[in-house]
Structure formats: structure tokens, C-alpha cells
Picture: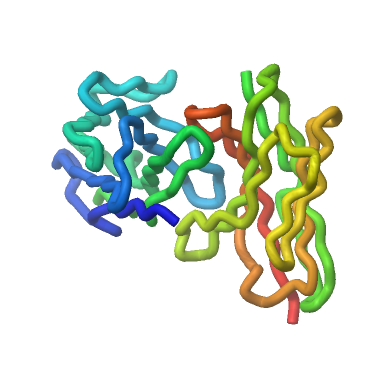
Length: 113
Length: 113
């Protein structure tokens, strides 16, 4: 099946710094990618829809200035957590695919100290 | 609005036995897809089985099968001959063509030796 990669797999940063997470579709093109957030022992919650060549669409309650999304090419979307705080510590997962299914990246574990 | 409900937060099963995980959903859409994903401690989302709503035949994948009842909006997962490696969190998910996933709250399954 298709492969979606994420980098880094885990990151630890200090409060107030910014962190960039990359999501790549390795063997297919994706005009749309999705970003999810998952807290321990909870389900995946959609944060935003990343659209190639246009602005991302954010879910209600997600701060677009806090979570910057850039989808500059058909194989790469980036999520930047700006001025990260301890409450931003979480597991972030991206997905990409087609009209009938989605492929999930392995996730990025973010810890903000 | 699309919703997915998993009413069993935790379940356990003896090794080699059979277990059924429940899932119900609500949608007004006529074309959609249903999925069961497994999330082990690594937190990688692993596709277990997929069902197209327009197909009446229940999907099967080796030891995994579903009971899809479209009128009742029910999509349960049966795991036969349970193995220790089946221990994981299981998420039921729903997707309208080309759109994002909607996830249930998950069922934590433990296979007991």
C-alpha cells in the first residue's frame, strides 16, 4: 500500500519555541492531507485539512495562528506549532490518500518542557 | 453531521477465543466507507479491515471479519482465534468519499494468555 512518512518521530522542545513537523506521501501525490491530534488514551481529533496551493481549513477551536500549516507541494505538508507550551504536548498524526481511503503517517510525539 | 460510537471502552478475550467489538455510526450520506484500525503501543495506525457501504457482502481479512448492517448503521468487528499480538486499541472510523475520517472513541482490547 501507499506510504506516508512523518518527521521527526519525536521532539522535545522548550516552552516558547516553534516546532515543525513534516508529512510526506512517498509514492503518490496528495492534494489534500489531514492533521490529527491524539491525547493519551483518547481518539484522534481532526485539527485541520491541508490543501495544496491554498489555505488550510481548521476545525472549530483550533487556533490557525498557533498551528501553521503549509502544503507547498503535492507530496509535502508541514505543521508548525508556534510558541509551543506544555499543553501542546501531544501525539500528532497526518494522513493522505484518495477518495476511497487514507494512509496514516507513523505520528510525531511532541513534548514541550 | 457524522458520528461514530464505540460503546465498549475496554474488552478482554482469552487467547484463541473469538471477540466482537461493536461500532455504530450516524450519517445522512449514501456513499461512504467504514474502517477498523488497530493502534498498538507504537501508536502507528494499522488498517485492519475496510468496507464499502454500497457492498452488501461483509468484508473479511483472514481472522478479521465485519458484520455490516447498513439499515441499523452498525459495523462490528469479529476477531477469531485471538492472538497476543491483537492486544491494542481498536478504532472504528467512517469516511465520506474524499473527506476526512471520523473516529470512534476506541476500544482497548487485551488478549489474555
